Amino acid sequence: MKKLTRQIRVGSVPVGGDAPCAVQSMCSTDTRDVTATLAQIAGLAAGGCEIIRCAVPDMDAAVALGRIKHESPIPVIADIHFDYKLALQVLDGGIDGLRLNPGNIGDKWKVAEVVKAAAERQVPIRIGVNAGSLEKELLERFGHPTAEAMVESALGHVRILEELGYQEIKISLKASDVMKTVSAYRLLSERVDYPLHIGITEAGTIFSGTVKSSVGLGILLADGIGDTMRVSLTGDPLDEVRVGYEILKSLGLRQRGVNFVSCPTCGRCQINLIKVAEEVERRLQGVDKRITVAVMGCAVNGPGEAREADVGIAGGKGEGLLFRNGEIVRKVPEDKLADALLEEIDKL
Image (cartoon, rainbow, N blue to C red; front, side, top):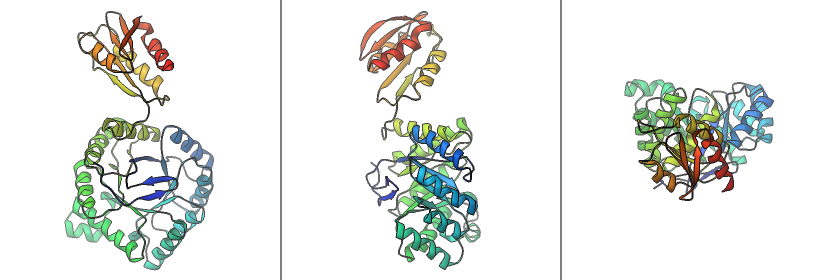
């Protein structure tokens, strides 16, 4: 069961409480390039991304982000480091959320200025702790970036905001080590009721990053931990969104798009199942129907899985049986299986 945390809002998206875990990503474009950034956000939003974060390395980017926010179809979070003036600029531009660590903004009066501006606009702040950039004092005390050190860092930043009377807070604790990240979130979840943004940082390329993120985020979500999530992958941000939904879908927490089932193939398979499955999955990427589609290779498990799906095929020798709603529709030659399956899906 999902842990009930304090609910905040990032623009139109509720985060925490009984709201479902929101899927977000981060633009890979130069924020100063408004046209390119808006184009990427539009593609991500079409793919299901619910919140987007943009880097703000300088004042030009901060100014550009105001334009981006007002044309973005989804809420925009500004990623701020070190310079409080950048935070003030994006807040003035109408940003939906800030990602910053008050401890690295500098003097307390600078933090107070940012908090005052955020409070006036009801803009939440995400404290983002990364194992690779912990405070020197914590590294000296704990020896290296442990889960306990990450939690202490987060709580230190939280105290700064709480002392200023600010509680519109979201927290993340990220490391590239899966179990260190899991341990850190478990420890923090016991100590605060703020919503948590979960992720495995620098997870890797689409293959290794998907595996690490699926394991780490799957454990946390199964524990009831996680109010927003980002799957960090080296590649197209749209893949982050797709993987995020697949993780949530596999745990029964969210349903977006088609639930696709296919068998691993074996010596019993007498059709080119891999080719058929890949073609069907590719053509289903833009389909947002709450249905289950099965592509199975032989007569052992195939008919059962295909019968349980909304639409499915069970392979034979150079052909396959086409099922819809548990009933055999017809027998189809191998080279027509993908087309026949898509036709039946269109009829649903």
